[in-house]
Length: 524
Image (cartoon, rainbow, N blue to C red; front, top):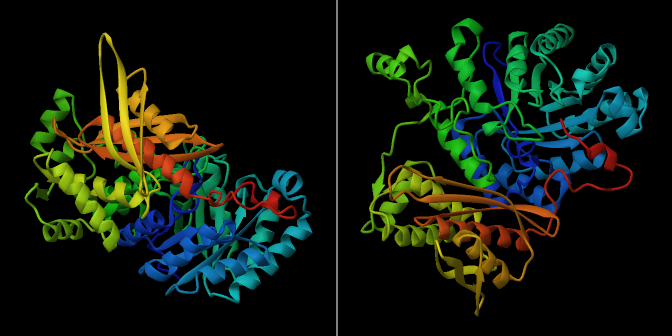
């Protein structure tokens, strides 16, 4: 049995988080995030849904083999093929968990699964027993638990525990519950379940209550919380890792429980996930938002200057907001660059190191000082672009004015071939993206466009994230440059490259076998 005074963090950023619309991480990006989650010291890391595609299987296997520290988990429906595929992907892990699930609510059983109560119970027993044959760490989730008839839900959990489940998860799959309801449900499950079994929460944010419900679960006996960095996930997202972590840290005395996360890595993890997924963090986001520790009111400023604790209940230094500690310039060499990356916890292979260093030198000629945040942005862009881009931006020229139509000319390289195209647009960014689209020979629709500065100052790097729809598929691209037009062009081209290189469907959306498609409509 785990320590009753410690709440374990089950991170599902790479599984449920990646199911958010428009997110499609490459294997390299998944591994990079997994390595950062290991530095954050999450207890369990759900690497993906191994059965959903070959690419997803490969990512889970790579994480299981290379990432040390957390328990590595893979999701599986309570069907043999899923469980066997998950077990195969997890073979290389030091510690592994198979996370099996099935829907238990009446609406899901009738309209999605087309299964009877007896069939669901049999599926749970057989599936959990099979998973327990591969690992002694098996989690069972009753999908849509908060809309499931209580007696049947408890029967499902009883069957799972008898079959070998060591963790029972109570998902609020559609974000329906209120904290009082959810807390009481967890209390009942805790009271009815053997003490050696951990009770877990998995709360969605459809009504903005994911964190509140998860906290209510902890207050009533749950000792595992399922979370995602920045709260990303299906629809309105999941319980936010950083918010839950700081609630338990800040109110530990009142709650009587703690956790083992390395809080210094929270900000770095948040920024990495935001950069690689293309999901920006709103300024007023709790804990990691740009305004989370900002004070504009004169009264607040006076209080904080006198004593930080007057208006800040958390220490920003504790979560990794220590300012820019590393400053590099155009005279810095490869060794200094590699050392700087190591000090901020970034590890990349030789190929990406070569590309990132080349980009660093290019930007250093235009930006006097490169900070640790700049470094993270540069590396994230290069890692996210893949090892062999199909199209490479050779040059960009743009111009326009109040009475002059904005135009742009780009030169792209595809292998030994150089392609040059020009376009006009509503602005220079629009023109640059139009020229890239013509040169690439694709039809793309811009869905979202976000631009931000990596650091402050007039020479700050522009960080642009775009989401495009190409051939009915949404893809995300990121570009970093001192000029926002160039950054936009790089982001646009990165999205086009991703669309061309990613041949497989998104994780957790790829299963369409006739007999089982209904079971994959929603995940916990």
